[in-house]
Amino acid sequence: MSVLQIENVSKSYGPVQSVRGVSLSLDEGDRVALLGHNGAGKTTLMRMILGLTPVTSGRITVFGSAPGSRSARRAIGFLPESVAFHGALTGREQLHHFARLKSVKTAVADDLLERVGLTHAMNRKIRTYSKGMRQRVGLAQALLGTPKLALLDEPTSGLDPISRHEFYDIVDDLAKAGTAVLLSSHALTELETRTDRIAIMSRGELLANDSLANLRQRARLPIRVDVTATPDSADRIADQLGGKRTNGCSVSLDCQQEDKLALLEQITGLGELVKDIDVTPASLEQLYRHYSVRTPEDE
Amino acid sequence: MSVFAIARLELLIARRNMWVATSLILMGLFSAVLTLAGGAPTGTLGVDPLLVATTSITTLSVYLIPLIGLLLSFDAIAGEAERGTLALSLTYPLSRGEILIGKFLAHLAVLAFAVAVGLGLTAALTIWKYGAGDMSFAPLIRLFFTSLALGAAFLGIGYTVSALSRQASVASGIVIIIWLVCVVLYDLGLLGALVADGGGFFTKTVFPWLLVANPADAFRLINMPAETVTTLASGIGAAGGASGLAGQLASLLLWPVLALFFAWIALRRVEP
Image (cartoon, rainbow over all chains, first blue to last red; front, side, top):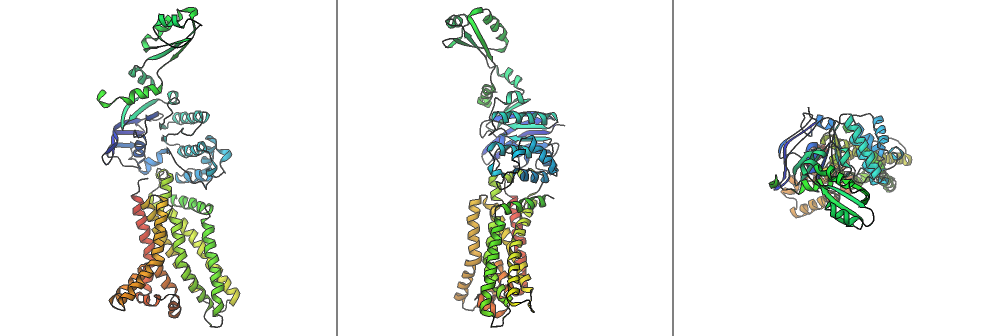
């Protein structure tokens, strides 16, 4: 049974349709990244999954239960995009409170504080915390009671690169334990290796929902090959390969996946003229732009 | 269980926010001053000194208790909605009713503590000055419980405003207006109407019920039963006696229930 099932869900606020006919499902251990510009409907979709906002049409089930029902809420861990915990409380007090609400032992809350690296600051008031530390409190409460579905809205905003790395380690552990993770993010590069599927939303519609490799294949975005030439040979290389000189000593070329090996062979054939080669597949940014600028009429 | 978890957190926040300290100092200070100052001229009159003290404290409580109640409650829902903690709390397995009751219990406890300390101080000071003698403590106990009812009513009103306005800054403005209307302008309005009516139909039939419909006035009437004291303390008190103790009690008991019910309805409509 899938953990989360979203079937043809729409949401209208008056004449404004913020989510249109989205279908998506998550199984145990899935790590799915939800991408989209501001106002694409990501947060609205999460709020509907949580039962905070009713759906206008369509159906959502969390482990077979309606969103917002007690059993659904017990199964979900949620990290909101922006939450300001009460500054007068310590991180530990705040987390113990949430543990009580979820009928989880407070000792578990202490373990989670250690897991997110807050043990040293847990007895300090939250108002003294940095943005990253507050985000960790939010993450810790989302992990309480090992949820079956973790909804993380912009989880890495405010985290430095090392903290982001640690964050994705926690997500990996969660997924390994069987939790389905749905996270939204703006920081695209970090998602490439840390998620199983990418779902792209634009203007309320789900435009893509697939693994990164499949998305790349379908988009047929060119692979970029940068050749660094030995001194004075950049022009010769550009002539022979037909690429574009980017500066005095390097040439850049675009090619499709199936032509890549042939091109590389050609480059190595140039022998001593070539100093170095960089091969860059289409980045998630490019893919994201490719999928999100398409209008529905292009389908 | 969730109710107690919420109440526990609210108590902690109230302690940290100095709300507990503020209410305590307000009630304690005024009770002590009124007990000591109020007793001075009555020693020779032979009036029960505790009765004099409770009369002064009642007059003060009519202003203070609603104020403390509203200050404790105006931020309860709007503030959490603004900070995003309301939405987060609602993703946990607990109902909006539980959130409301949990907060109410905590805030009522803060109020009860402040009132108890204030009245305890009054009792102690009175005994210290005049000796226990054959003093009756019934007025103090009555004052305590009616204060709680009055405070509960205004807590409920504060939650309702908080849920409806959804912005703490707006809610704070509205509760101050409500406070002004209930404890000052309402009585002034009634007085004006009395003068204009000149002892006609309004004065005899409508007025007593209008008076008791305001929980602050019901509270005042209940705690100032002695005709002479009442007349001294408040010009309109005596006329209000017509609605009787039953009316006053009903008002004081119904208001908290109704106000909390309205707050619950308003909270149910909040989309965090």
